[in-house]
Length: 90
Image (cartoon, rainbow, N blue to C red; front, side, top):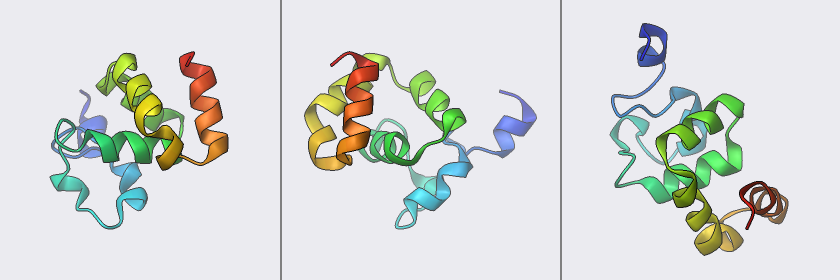
């Protein structure tokens, strides 16, 4: 991890650019394993290309696809859900 990447991410590697989408959380305390549901949901819903690249490098595609199958309908807007289903081949 480069110095710039280290400074622009939390100690657990979450991009600080996602902070506006976690207003009710302390981003520094979120842990990718324990808080995967929330991190995946917010990043799929609001993430830009760099943040989505991070998400797919952090979690296996199968984990993200399983999340979309299980929770996408209730957690994502219909347009986002349709996009992710198409992209993930669901």
